[in-house]
Length: 381
Image 1: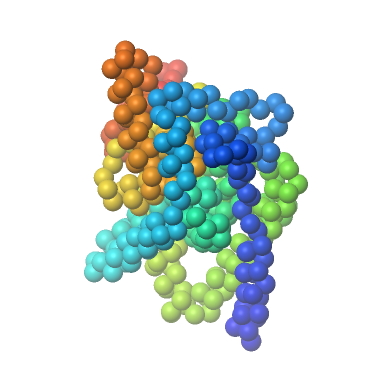
Image 2: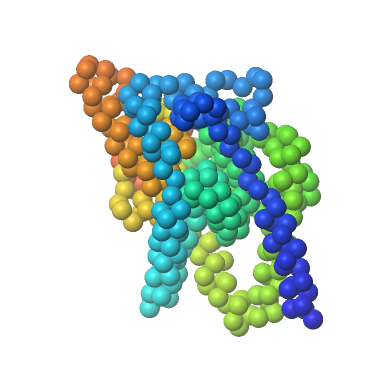
């Protein structure tokens, strides 16, 4: 009878979840104008108010050194094949990690791989992983469910961040709270890496949204609140169903869920936080992308598990470029910078990528451990 109840609920749950379409990103009017399209995305009516500043100054600056037509070609190259291949790569890497003979090593490996589920979610909400809108929608909820970040809420949160990156008052990643709190000492750094603040924020936010409480600035519109409220209720219902099945079938389902999802998810947060720290921390609180965002050098495996997001400055500059073409965007950017330097231009030094993630975290820690200064770790480097 208990199984009958679950099987009866599931069609309604799935139907409700699939009805929560991610908000549409507007297309530019006119014939494939990438600048207008990017501007329209950033100034979407679902995200702006009349008092909003112009968010595209850095896009104009980039436009001076990278041909707009070249970025257009990259932006138009969304591919279902590349999207599914990337998903299969991520899934098969997790499968290999799960089959490592040594249990402790296998657990750490699965935690490392699963920490990058977040990047899958991120790419889906940009609608650039697949050409098919439905595929982006389904996989956004798949990854969002796995990492406790409901996809529609993350869409609104993330586009607020893209539009106002570096703006202390409006950037969603710079607002007071547990998710992205300032780090100005070693204890704060260790707490951030632990992932504990994230779990507290993720659970409490989802529960609040399920009860209709949406205090976030980027959810002030009625449609956004309704979508997020409904989504949170469905996610919590699904988590409840999964937990009930795991409890009823402890020796089979329960153990596998713990081993392959819950424990790797918890242990994977430090890996994810170690990565995320480098995207914007220590950069200027500036509206210019090349001053508030950095790209990182890393190895092939790390870059591909992260869905090419180490090219993070390129991603912020051109958010409509698919993940697998960001390396091409980076090449165009470096070529443009080198040509500008040959002509005597010096203002583009901020575009160049930083060192690797280990080097960055060491530098970040060194700054934290210095005697107290006015800048602490949030200064620029």
